[in-house]
Image (cartoon, rainbow, N blue to C red; front, top):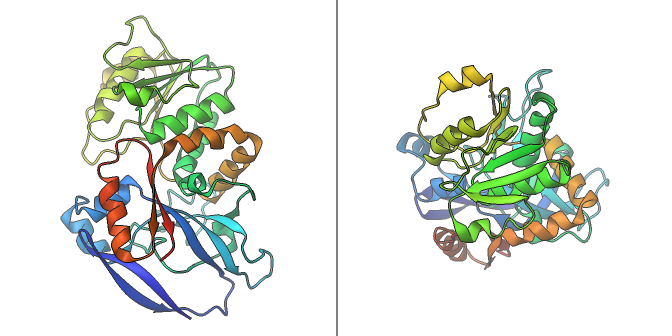
Length: 341
């Protein structure tokens, strides 16, 4: 069959290409239905990813956050019309000590490897997780972002000591919101504080124990562990504040991506015996765990719906461009494309 792939060929410029794909294989054929725009997609779209990276990775189909419907499963395991979330990470090997999302050999969609802006996507069974029948697909579209927090907390669970009375999250954006939400569900006995700089964003965090502006943190406030979700240059200031307010031998989970190196007060890291724990992306196991959380805590989906910023119907390529342009000025939440092209 001929599959249409919608690739970014240069900043702000999409083009259609055609791939001849055989359905005589073990791959499940999926029709994407809802796609979510990520900040990483925008860095490619606007050309701010860096000249060398753009040269190496384009042309490329964007989007790594998406859900779809099964069109054909050669094994018959999944019925036609089954709603699934698609795993963008594609490992080519396994390692007993290193997760699939940390193996340099793994491919990741919309990062040098075609993403989900296609008519059809062909995936192995282990790259698919079935969704609950009544799932809000606009929320499910950004499940990949939720899995990043899920993955982080799975690493936190293994590494952090068991005194977890107070946990602080720095960063009042989408990832900070998700991290706080999962903390409150998975650690109900812990006090969760959100630290941010924007009042109207902090107002969305109705489920935390306390929302605090970063320029109004009480000097005597102490936390046992922290998650940094600020990203960019803000990562440096967030880590600095965390080191000031964290108790000795606490764990600092680093999630915010910075394009440039940041300074870290290693003297106090050593003095307090702190653990800095990095997390990036996620694997198929994190997707399954996240869907299990959706099933166990249905109100999580209601809270996550707060993150739906805009929904665009995309019937032609120019409307995809419109969605990306609109997302650039979206100050809160995720921009979703209802894929009808």
